[in-house]
Length: 95
Image (cartoon, rainbow, N blue to C red; front, side, top):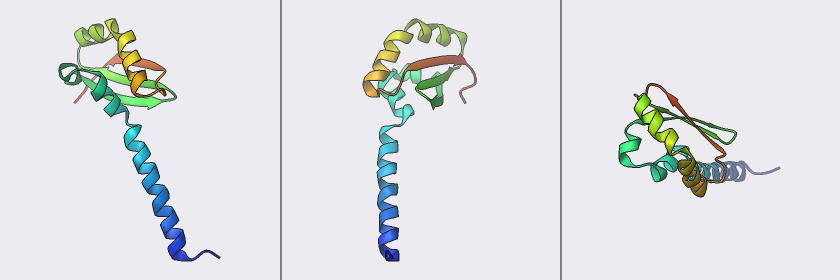
């Protein structure tokens, strides 16, 4: 049998690896690297599931603006992380 201290050590090491991986895989960080400060004031991260990154914007003006640049935004997001396959922008509450 494995000693309890070895079991605890193994569990703690696996948690540290997951924690480190999660900071690199943070969709909000991808958005901060991709969008300008002005754009970030008007958006909210909603979800990231199965390659789809969903964000909400606070006005129809920003919805239109970001949809105009959706292709270039998606390309920039994909340079930060290849997991992003699609960008969905919706009108919603951000605060």
